[in-house]
Image (cartoon, rainbow, N blue to C red; front, side, top):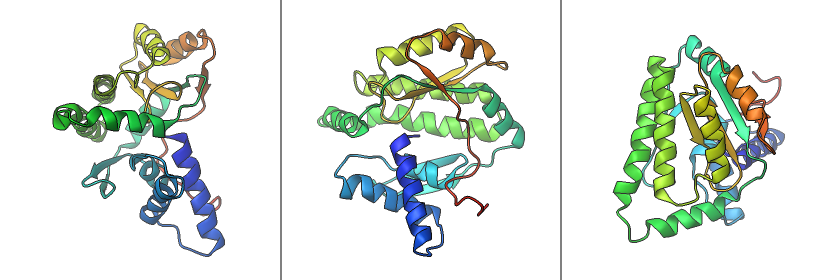
Length: 229
């Protein structure tokens, strides 16, 4: 999930509460997206705002952009526990400008076989959703790998050399999944699904320069007011 999107969602929620508006994930995500695209004039997807507003795991159908259909996935407590234990998110040392990456991808798609390039991304999302609902962490990791490979095929540079370094180290340590988050490109984060015991992945990543292990994990709940449940 994009950091900027989650911050904007949190700020919108805070402002809505000041004006006595009842929190609603749909309107919250939409307002945050409007700020990034209309008010700030940037390029942005819609999935990060939806993820921050709703929490949990969701399968999002976008057709046509920016209209969405969101299905909340039924995830067993044991699956949440496994994800929390095996998931490692690595900050690559620098932020990235996702709007610029989006512009590059849009240019790449112009005149291309769009369906051929985008279908692997759609398939990976559906596979990931099915795997999570079935509690199959290994297949979920495989879907993450498919997504990352599709990103790399979509645009040169979406999977940076720095990200590839993290992925290579994690793979040697038995990781079953990895995904370059957000728009990709230079900087940003990579999420790894380690083996049953992710300690070796964590120790290996810590040996790499200028990287930070982030204390984050899967969140069953979305943006909410403190004390509001």
